[in-house]
Length: 105
Image (cartoon, rainbow, N blue to C red; front, side, top):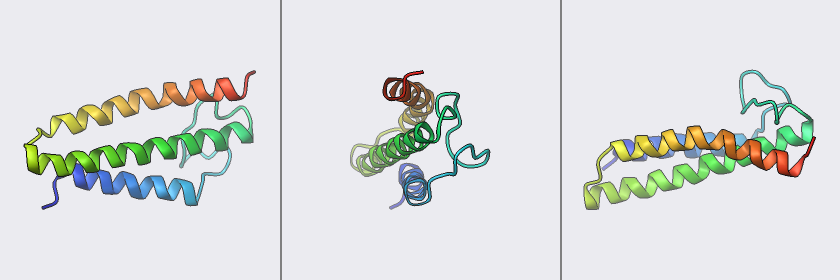
């Protein structure tokens, strides 16, 4: 049976694969993660997009496993929302930190 975890996991998995196969062009305003650190150079942009795609795929896998466990252990849906919120808040800081480490100003 498909639950909310599984639907979100499939959507994130699809989005992560799209970002890897068709990375956003440098400075795109519609697709990709835009931050001051990613806009420094084309190399920093591509590195940031790849990190973000890997993070999206990681969260998709975690939510997929939680979808399976939800059926077995009856996990509440708000745990998935908590993971997505942590991902959203933490991913920008992690990407910014990794780019600043690899591409110092």
